[in-house]
Length: 386
Image (cartoon, rainbow, N blue to C red; front, side, top):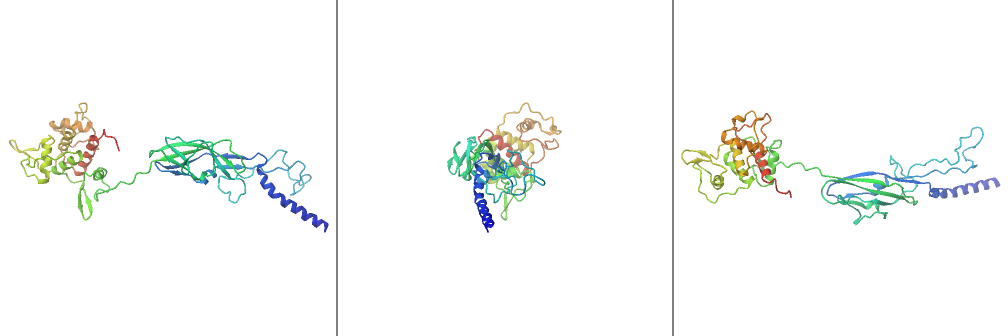
């Protein structure tokens, strides 16, 4: 009975000693804590939020396992004699599993120390943005226990990259000696897919220019059954080209409604065609004597369209530009030679893929809107973007 009582007493003493061992992991001063580097990516112009896990996953606590005192015998077997396990040399220690951020994240259920607070040692570049705790600006050198409420507010809508440094402190009071570096990258958002206004231009090369002109209020297009159509591969008429140039390049109608041109001109074209003649943008087709015809419903050639654009933009002559790279440069009429040089020199046209200018070929509606888009950019090239 006496032996049984002693055994129970010894077991009780051992059980009572276990919590004390669990709480003594910080008493040796040999705990190592590490604050690691990590990165976060966000969208330019939008606040980037942190969570507590962002820092806890990159904070590591390494706890040395206690070693037996010299002469202490393991309960698992004899320390000497046949069958004994090799003993560690005095001073040897084994590092226990990492707490607070092991690589596989499988530290669930551990009872070791965790991250108590972080201290910022270097703040991010303010030209990129400001680091805050909640709504308050974060300060360097002050422990932050509410680190899960950290956020980064961009200084602008521009893309940028910056860094800040941090040191973690465990709930045992151990602080990492080396700071971890957090790299913040703010990227521009993906541009939204282009809006296509015309049912017949979903995959057409001229669609970007046509859609841009709709956004600018320059184009409307034909509307049938709730859908718009542009007819990009049809030849543009002289009348429609005049309207498009006027809208794109800001040419105001004349005040007089007496038509200058001798042939029939629809009422909606009279004032604007008079303005084109008065400004020297369009002379018309000679019809004998002093008479000139507009021929509003007929197509116009590429060189005729270039002449109108050249006159509307009042371009200085590109005297150094030659047309030697185009195999059909000889087809350009004499009166249009400088006009064509200007169009190439100012990059209103680059010719076709097979190095042709096709000066005497009718202009399609798709070609016209692309040419006018380039003319519009030339007209506004010195203006600041909003």
